[in-house]
Image 1 (tube, rainbow, N blue to C red):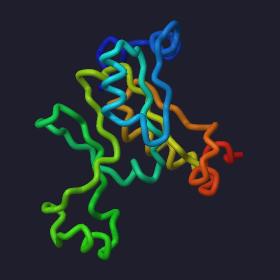
Image 2: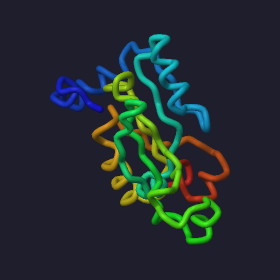
Image 3: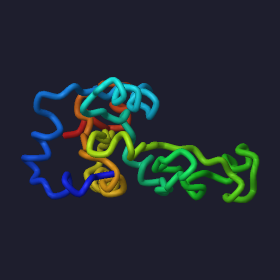
Image 4: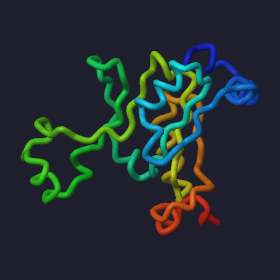
Length: 161
């Protein structure tokens, strides 16, 4: 979620606001999830990064407001699963499914402080993913340095030419 003050800033002012003289929780594979990010913010981090989320994954999500937790959840759409996967999940109706949350944002804590990191090898999918989460994050980061096998084999990050 972006505050009205943040939205009105120029790109240069946003960069200054986010990155100059700040304590930043760097992105970490399978670690920069909501619990770690919110804990870092409670210990006075100024900016936190999400873990790397592959562009296709966020594009297959639906944005949902979770009033119980006070969060914004990006939940994987039932249509992104095969029939076999849905059967394994134990339901024939998408309303009964406990669909996976790909990203959970806590607006009360992460407003103007969350940088969403995208793993991508396709500029069109990267743009689509960025536009999907843009209202709920302060900035977008394209991961260009990760040599993790799934990224390199998928033509993402350091292999993008």
